[in-house]
Amino acid sequence: MSSDTTTLHHDDAAHGEHEGMTKKRIMKVFWILLGITAIEFFVALVIAPKFPGALWINPIYIVLTLVKAFYIIGYFMHLKFEKMGLILAIVIPVLFIIGLILVLTNESHYWIELRRALTSLL
Amino acid sequence: MSTVVTQQVDEVKSTPWSGGRSPFNVEYGKMMMWFFLLSDAFTFSSLLISYGALRFSAPTWPTPSLVFQSFPGLIEKDAPLVFVGLMTLILILSSVTMVLAVEAGHRNAKKEVVRWMLLTVVGGLMFLGCQALEWSHLYHEGFWWSKIPNAETLQEFFKKGVPLSQQEMSSHQFANLFFTITGFHGFHVFSGVVINIIITINVLLGTYAKRGSYLMIEKVGLYWHFVDLVWVFVFTFFYLV
Image (tube, rainbow over all chains, first blue to last red; front, side):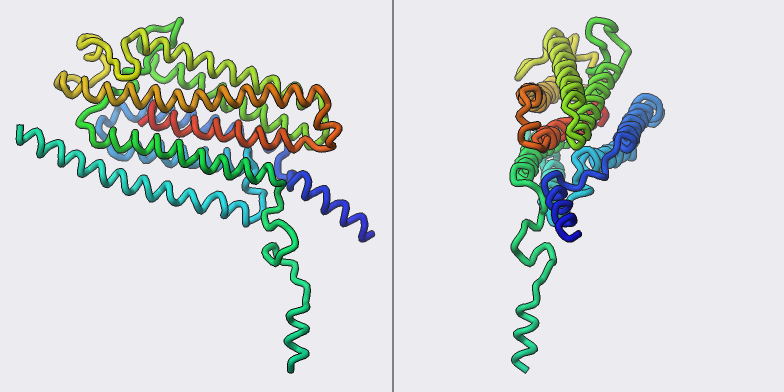
């Protein structure tokens, strides 16, 4: 009895926990990804032209992209079913990327001002 | 008193971080693949964030739905995003065939693994073919690294009333960033296709059947999904925003 459980555990370690991804679930994630891409196209081709210069269009794209990223990383790359230690080891460093985004978007506003100042000097 | 303390120390702990086994519970190569992908994510983020900063600070930018409005070889104009939509679909589908290969590997079904891996390779090659068409289309319009079309052609890619000097400046930035970033991504796809072919040959030779585990498929799968993931971001920031 106890030896049975040990082999089972050993197998789990060798293959990882993979009961998470069945064919049915793979297809479900595929349809979700396809659906989100279709929504992005709908927004880009139908909604965006009606509101030229609207500031809320780009955040929609970014949120939808992040949702797609979650499904690809979580299900296709199987991260959602890994041990919490691995999930944190991969996800926490990504926060530095958010830091870089904040720094450089802020910086680009200074570049605009700088360019304006330079053109007024010329 | 002291005996109580000893008992507590001697008690065998079984939490993931109490030593004696990996808290991550993944095979070494798979964990290293994750860490490689993390570093690659930083590279791609640096490229995309520089693109974002340059674009935000530019007074104007070529409109994506005007630059990418042809389906090379079929439709010359007025089909914005159709071709890139096809590319996205191909890459998502090849990601699906990749997970199906991983799933077949868990069942040690060699024939199915080979079938899905070959379909993944075909998907990757189709994507690369599309990208070659897209690049050659833009090249023939006049875009290349530090090259832009003549003033007349350039006019078509901007909203009306943008001065020519601004058009030329932002088109240069657009061309350099577009070819560098999609080129770097395309190179990843190319490497992925090569890796997938090698692994498929190994499957056919029975390497993993002998090993008793198709874990290698999972590792190359991680890389392949990452390539798809990067495309999702490239697609959003170059073609939609």
